[in-house]
Length: 298
Length: 302
Image 1: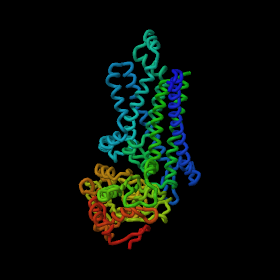
Image 2: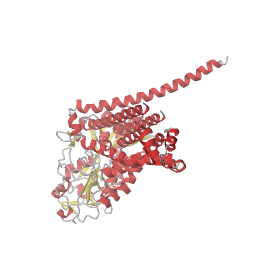
Image 3: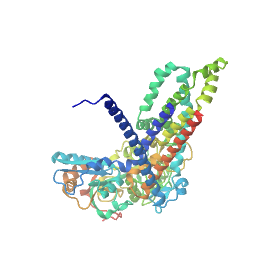
């Protein structure tokens, strides 16, 4: 009944920590690999087992997988996803970066006390709530202002803008905060005005990679968002004619049809292919971010 | 470096979102697989799992509650997931009963020969319009022309000068399949605003001037949306029972092979007068026992 020595005790504690963290990390990696493998095997079956041509899938405009013969042109979904993503990034980037500069450079006190909690609150609102507000407030507003049905790309862009704004803002705040103090002080000492310092030194020089990263992460979130967009975009599978026409996205195409299709059927596989496309796009976003952050460090 | 870390946390969140949206269709029952008893025989007690059609789900849930309150020891779990999910899961043996809005024969990728069909209710589907649309009746041809996009203004069918707005269901929807087969005589509808949930479809029709879509009778209340008569026949339960109003479909409960034990007992219970004339009618379905005609998978009426 000898008690363990001190050395043994510490070895035991160290060992537990090592095992726990290694197991957690391996589970995460395994899960990610399993998901990628699963989506890829299902998504590629469309092209290998069902004989759909990749070209038709990527640039075809007719989507009727249950027709005879089935048509698998997913371009309306792809185009819709890209338009809402780019559109919301164009709106949210200036707003988010502007807010970030206000919070860090103009009025850190208000930034800390008011803006920070507001942004955290915005992050915490579930996407279904954004979608429901969009459906109940934004759609009637758009219908009364511009006519038509209200369900439109514009509605999707506006809802996504609000959703990705906190992401872009909080990451931009980090980027702006990391600008060294001496750089700012040197700029001011040389006689630059406050705005000249902010614009030329902070935005265009020091924090540009960080700001770009913030925008790309916002875009990645917009690209993958399903529920809120599905509620306001109208889900019309056709090439949109204007910002006011209803459209569709890859994510809402998947969520609306997944439960009604039979696993293994060409239709179901085509939905997986759309999922694979989303995954590939996310990988591209990741690569872009790594590339930018490397350049920022150099 | 700090930024990089934060960046990866966000990306991780996005990946998780994919996992959820991507797998929603088939992974939902993943947890159920463990709990679903795969033993071939269920006694009077035991438990069964039902999944599938969301249109049929409220009825089966309520019937299961009634059943369980009088049969202590039996557990019946009812899940949604959509008709495709229900059919594929019952074929796989993951669930004991698969609910479906359409015949298994109509779904690509399902071996219908091994499934046994139990028709437990009938659901009527009406063309529903915004309450401000003055038109009350359409001929079959007018309905087809509206939904295929040939008629784009209500004034062409005797209404006001208001643009027609189509509200559709997703391509894979059972309601859509029924409406196309019996309302549009098989013609594909033109693209319109698309939503899956009946509640959302009703909300859109109610709020959009000149909107037309299709909804189960239980969603037609005359106030928020108005049901349209077809060739002079109103969308009522009575007109469905004698097939004067043709747009209707069976609600199916499929089993793999002939049901036994609790599964059989529950399906028999669904067909009792208590459920058929009580719960079924109360929830806006039409009792299958009231039907004066029968229809097969190919759509032939007897």
